Amino acid sequence: MIKMNCKFINYLFVILVICSIVNCQQCSTDIPLLAIGATCKADQTNICKLGYCNSTTLKCVAQKAKDSACTANNECLTGGCVSSKCGYIGYAFLGDDCVDDSSCVNPTKMECTSNICAFKSGQSCAVATDCANNQYCKVTGATGECLASSDVNGACQSRYDCKENLVCSYSDNTNTTLSCQLPYTKQAGDKCNSEDDPSRIPFFYDCDISKGLMCSNSKCVANSVSQQCSLCMTATDCKGYGESCMCNTNSSEVVELGKAGFCSQGVYITSACKTTFTELMTCAVDNNCPMNQRSLFTQGGCLQTNCNTEACKMSSCFNVADSTSKGFINMVLSACTNYKYTDIQSECSVPITVTPSPLPSSSSSLLPALTLWFICIILAILKI
Ligand SMILES: *[C@@H]1O[C@H](CO)[C@@H](O)[C@H](O)[C@H]1NC(C)=O
Ligand SMILES: *[C@@H]1O[C@H](CO)[C@@H](O)[C@H](O)[C@H]1NC(C)=O
Ligand SMILES: *[C@@H]1O[C@H](CO)[C@@H](O)[C@H](O)[C@H]1NC(C)=O
Image 1 (cartoon, rainbow, N blue to C red):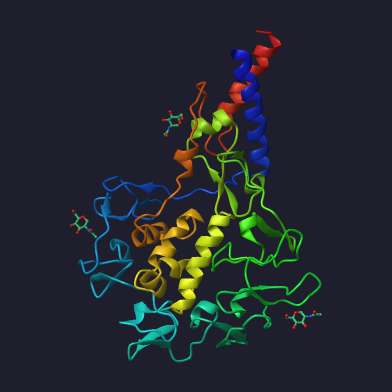
Image 2: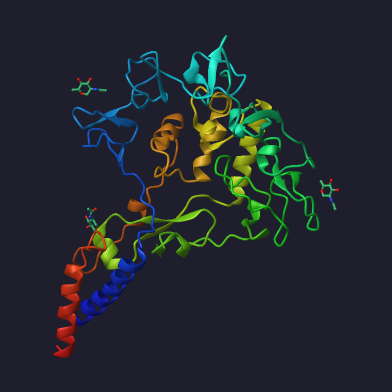
């Protein structure tokens, strides 16, 4: 028993020393989702599930329905507090109908003039989402211009230069010039565009996702997904498309497992998602709705108004994490009541078989590990 523990402690010690040298904190920490009534921090380092943190009581309070009295956006299930009542914000693109400036997708640049979102004087677009549907932003010097996006075979540099149901890729394997093409047409070994897409839908791709293909180094290759709950130290341990290493916040488990976290799939490259996304895209095109991750779940917006069923099916195609965009998870959960939220921590927790000592929370507190290691060395010398 002592022998087994020592072997493990030695292993841990090596990890800790390496970590203190190269700084191993490379797993991602998701913001904890707290239940209504739970104790919370007002600084948004945690999020109340379908709720907000009352800054006086420091307790999670349920978000309120449309037209309820409010003082801040995060108090409302609708996503916004408009003229002291819960209502919709950030849903209207350039040229769309609006109620006030907060209706517009980019209120720093846009204003609601005669109930239409328009650029404020001296303002112009910087990114495609500042423009109307099927427009891109051409930036010249300090100003941008919203221009019509290209159709199939039209020139592009990024997919935003193409109509919303097209991707920016190559017409065939020998062509070296990018052009607008239909999605999911490229097969294994075909040339593809590995362009990263931070804003539009991540698996909207030229490679055929129904065959499990992803684009890597400009070639469509099989997406090798990490086994569910496999252990990792850093994101590079997780090989599949859009995977990250999510920190295990239970330090007892970390000590037991000897790894910092679990591989978590952010995006599912499957046949079902091709179908789901194709249906959503058809609805978006039919209703002339602009498509990006945020517009998918913005209440009062074109997609949520016309394509709620299709948009909300997307829970089986990507995981919404909240580590970067605080409050995005609540936006999704309130727009889609059936949304399936994956809590990697509870799904991947493991029963502990031995009782280990807690892992030092940072590399600066190596002392307990060092002491244990010393004891182990002495035990080894004494051959106990
Ligand atoms: C927070 O709680 C206090 C005390 O119950 C209450 O008076 C106040 O209105 C609450 N604030 C919000 C924003 O809910
Ligand atoms: C590359 O594709 C574009 C768009 O389809 C086409 O206009 C162009 O002629 C192609 N170039 C070559 C060398 O095939
Ligand atoms: C950590 O995990 C162990 C075993 O899975 C469990 O018994 C314990 O309650 C967990 N601790 C916390 C704080 O969740």
